[in-house]
Image (tube, rainbow, N blue to C red):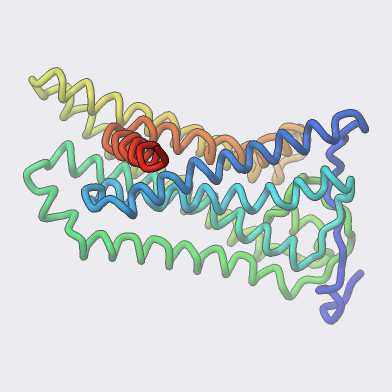
Length: 313
């Protein structure tokens, strides 16, 4: 048992990556390339939206939050993971583990909040097009984004503050990354309050966001079915259909690892795979779906690349 005074000096051991000697270098190179691609794609979207005033619209300003969040999520995983692969050392200090867990939960919760806000934006744009400009004003958008991030930060901050008073009984963590449920398993004191608050945040993010998205997309579907303009209908359904697939993938990928920790029947290897995949696939896929596939953003990127190529000549 580690008393509160020395808890900051505790070194934890994460679950082994189980890499053979032959696969260390390929895994390190693959991980490095994947991380660089994630940063490049997401930062490209951020810079494109920020530098082009034509993209300073509610839809794109909301979208801007997604690549920033995805870059944050990938950064919570890859630097520490790449170090572990290279050194074959799975140790991590307790403060670093808390920080990683905090960033991972910030990323996961923010992904839900941002996608929910984007669904609401599409709902207003498709169902109330004449009132869209009056509802989604710059001031309203600033309020939505500020309140969204502030409330989210407070909820996650409280979640990890509840861990601080507890003493640690063991240093081995049965997961590949640090997050709240895995940290609670190494505590030797009663964590009932943590469990209740954890279930509350689980309900808050998953149930409320799922309810809002279901409400908005049912109304969008009804509007599209009754709309006589076939081109507008197809475009709206394609955009919303893709958004819905991304949202449901996020729902399942974040929900499963958190619930798996609360039941003994869930396979540990599946829990580990899902806890890692949520930090890898969305940051790679989201820029392709919401950035490069979006006509206006794609055109701005192509124009910028042509300008740079011409300036080099």
